[in-house]
Image 1 (spheres, rainbow, N blue to C red):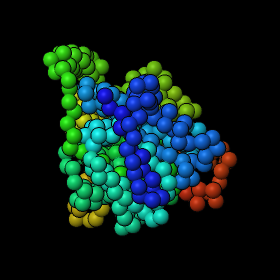
Image 2 (image 1 turned 90 degrees about the vertical axis):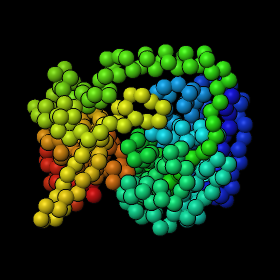
Image 3 (image 1 turned 90 degrees about the horizontal axis):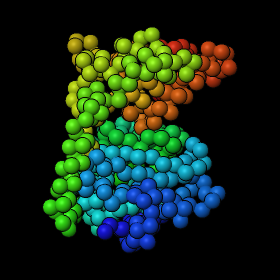
Image 4 (image 1 turned 135 degrees about the vertical axis):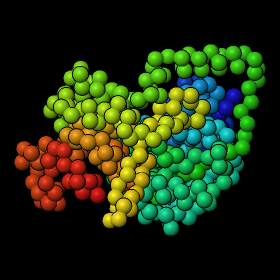
Length: 390
């Protein structure tokens, strides 16, 4: 039914579309197809940062068709492991690919100068990104591209921050502000290709050949998803509800996994975030759950009651990575650390793991002030962790 693969060469700016029904008929979903495309396009021994290393995005046959099927898979060679890199992201990306008419996208080569890809239906352009290449904030980059690119409402914007530009091996790719290709360093691969961002939109319709049985099945699946206790959990508190639960079970990662419980877990629990900091909940396209929880962080930037307000997404993994695993006692401080990672485009779980390891190593004199550029690392010291991220 859908089997179009868009191939893009960043060296030349040329592109072509191939019907790869041979893959989509044989392999299961976007992940199955993306894995096979990686095998085709990435010979053994390829350096993850070489122009020959591909970036692949793929969606499956049920994307945008049934509720909750909203993820896009990215497949690449990971600069962290040297092995297969696989990451998934929600947002509007799978919808935008479907509307543009592409089921997979394969990107190879390295642009001569900083660029971004603009994909709108069958119009695929490589555009100059010199002016935004060194803009560190992924939020600002998104705002700029929304002003100059078409497709509002059917558009998805992927972009990297300063970490990706500098090819930090655990740099992420931000998708539509609050979603990410987080693990294994896809952002660094973007940076190695001089690729700052990708904007995708389209105007195609999704045609259903037999609408009556489809509607019946859609409603059945929708009801099965929405009318459950699991749905209530993910929409109400989100995965952050696991903080208190895992703390009670002694399964909460704490201080570089030296402990399995945190004495101040209640202060950074999902309940605390929801009662005191939650601003709103949003959902990925085609998903009724609405599990993305956005907190409001209000900080003073100047005397005279001058404030800055940031909207920051949070979930269980982020709270333990930059909270309990670092001994952070205040929810507001967890948000400060999340915001700093988001600003630079760093994978938060990897960043939290590095900081936790470094803190224990510093504590045990395995690393010393010269190794940390003079920053003293202590559990719960938010300001030192912010300096380390910078």
